[in-house]
Amino acid sequence: MDDSQYGTRDKRGNWTPNETLQVAPYWTGQWGKMGQFLVGLVWPWNAFHMGTAFLYLWFVIPDRETLATFSWDWALWLLFVNMAGIFVLYGAIEFFYYVKRIQGDRWRYNHKFPADNPSDVFWFKSQNLDNFLRSFLTGIPIWTAVEVFMLWCYGNGYHVFGWVDWQDNWLWLAILIFLVPAIHEVHFFCIHWLIHTPFLYKHIHSVHHNSINPSPWSSLSMHPIEHVLYFGEVLWHLVLPSNPVAFMFNMHAVGYGALNGHIGFEKLEVTEETAIDSHAYAHYLHHKYFEVNYGADGIIPLDKWFGYWHDGSKEADARMKERFRKKKERLNAKKARQTPAE
Ligand SMILES: [Zn+2]
Ligand SMILES: [Zn+2]
Image (cartoon, rainbow, N blue to C red; front, top):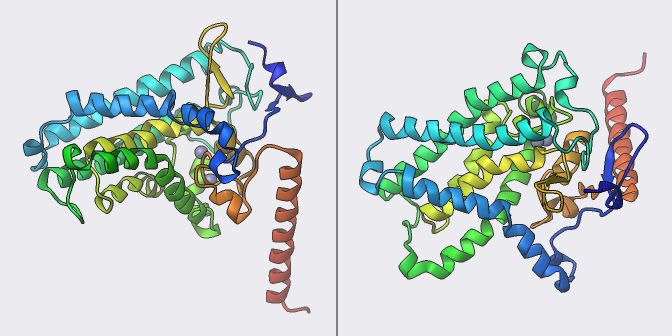
């Protein structure tokens, strides 16, 4: 596919899409775009997360009675399946697009590939190895622990308002499933903004930001405290009337779905004519500029409301630089006040 029709490449080889990022069309009254937006929301990524949630519920997760008693048998089995699932999904994209480089640097935002750039900030000087180990040593185990806790609560009927079933509550559960991306954006924006405050950034979130040029293995490469805050999103299903289909979909949207922001390509070519949208650009810009786009796709556009939105345009770039300049000025003024003149 020819990416030059959809974006421009600078002298260094970095590709920028022509189309700027858009918040969900219902915020701007562009009702004609709703159909396209809804298709993009469902297909293929959320459909995939729902599909894998069902596969888990049918083949991996034991019945409710078994879940009522914690046992290492089913907990470790779940851990194994999660590790295998992440290995296959993230590993496949890493292997084909980063190792084999089957589409070269077409649709690639940053022309460099992490494997070509060893750096001291990473374990063993390797971004891939560092990110992979952090995902498997703490990321997936913490994800699984949250999942086990939720399933155990379900097994025992622990819930603030009681678990609900499909028969009597199908309409609410269908709405809840559609609300999952919104829950994700609000939760993620809040915890993400929080860990960008100086102290927490230094001690916790900087681990994730070591990957300025992220690849699939960067997705779950975080400090363990960030893992807890990030996967803790699913605990909302103990407060909202919910059931296992809804919370497992949410679990997979955060676990498997962490991938999306870190794909590094605007599209993944599948055949000569077809490609999948990665939805990576907003979060790619976050890794590049740090203090922009704390949320996700603009479903609930908190970034726009709070002035952090970067849509990829020159105007957004100018606004961001002006904001950074003012912040620096404020910090310098504060420093000057604290250091008395000699
Ligand atoms: Zn990230
Ligand atoms: Zn961040």
